[in-house]
Length: 191
View 1 (cartoon, rainbow, N blue to C red):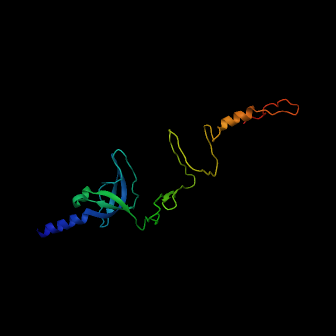
View 2: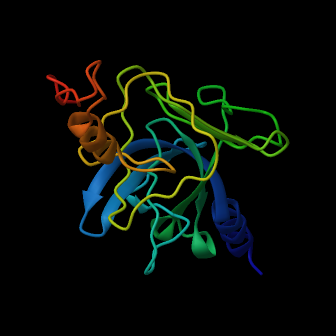
View 3: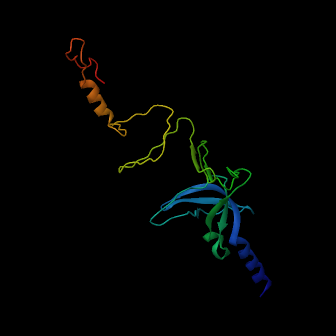
């Protein structure tokens, strides 16, 4: 093998897996691609971003500007590189360090975690945030529920006995035995 061949082989091996930082995101028909700056200062063309699932079931979580990632270059050819998983850095430290509590944190302050020891799922959202669950087949909840704040329903509310509408019908139509033995009139103010 000639000296040129060895240096070329060394270059290709060096390029197989590299640390890089995301410099920008670019729109492509199949989704965003990332332009990265490698540790040795190379600015890449827009590269595909790896994801957990990209078939019938899909996930999407784009990297942030400045996020440290691994860049995989098949055969050491950086023009064919893809962006792999992210790595913690001084600019983007891990949001938690407890192996029993996986954490997702977001730039707006939202934080979702699950503690495997205490069996506690926690979703802490910033002020003014909302939660939307669309389940046209219904939502089932098993356990006690504690609410701090108001509860609003556009439909009827029921407990183990009957609905609030049924209670209203009973209240609005009820009478009492009066002092003279006859019935009083129903309540003047309906519920």
